[in-house]
Image (tube, rainbow, N blue to C red):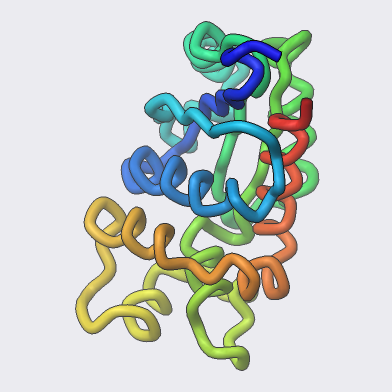
Length: 186
């Protein structure tokens, strides 16, 4: 086994400014729970706004950029907000794009948005994190004493997330963990 084999590189594609800093922190928070060998390397995510991430030619360009960052074990993780789309259909459509052929890639749609994962790992049990279309406002009222700002709070809350609670309360969060595990399996 070489030093290269000890590293799993997960290059990501995200849609929001907050996720650029938050997703790598969340993935590193998840890493110890996977029991995967070695270390996790997360290059800076490639940001594509929602209107562009669903366009095959834009996704193809982002996949090319991120593929060049993965050497050895790992792959590309695309994280999008499901918003009002069916998450399974959205994941399948993006994963089936021509750009993804031959690339080790997993697509995960946060239901309904990334902030629902923060609620799943931090809000009271009587709050269904995936049932609220505007999870951002709930994050403000339940997890913060100030208005929620993606670029200010998302990374911090991702680092503090209770992984066990989020796993038990959010099916889309479980898909994220499963996707990371698949990308980093030897």
